[in-house]
Length: 263
Image 1 (cartoon, rainbow, N blue to C red):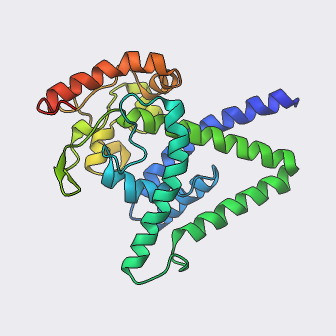
Image 2: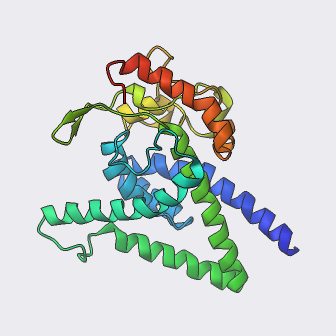
């Protein structure tokens, strides 16, 4: 293959790794079975984004739709500002969350039970394997597909909660997560592709519920996207188009659920 053919091929691999690989790892990381969680960790290591498990389970699910969740896109925040912010903040929030968990057991972050050691070992293993199979070119292409997969993941994260918030109750407390804190899409084909990830409100309500059992919410219970994730993630890469589609929907959402809040 020529250089551009290789780049095109690994661009496609990265899209597959992000759309399918990370999505399936998300399903697996939520299960209680240790074997399934290990499989989820392995899939994440294939895109060099292992800390996503800690960030997702310990930070995102707890603080979604609040300023303490890096992954919740702020109202008016374009994806190209969101992406570098998330790359920077998510790693730190994931590491600090695991550090706090260990501190509760009177253990330092250097204790081998810290999953970050497993994350690093798996990622280094895949980097070495890529180098062994393809030399420096193979290593570069592996890192490239990882970047594309991470881009794909964070596009989905951006779409899922853009502009949505939870009411602050004072003293650092927020209302419980409701179906209205996630954008949903009932489009059949994209739900087949993404194993019902677009039924996101129900996943937020029952995180360990397996994907075939996730329930759909109507517009009476949760905000709805006009199109499925594939179309919406493409729109998110063009901030003006995205804001034209979504900002009025966010404003209507606020008027429906939080009419007493003006700011």
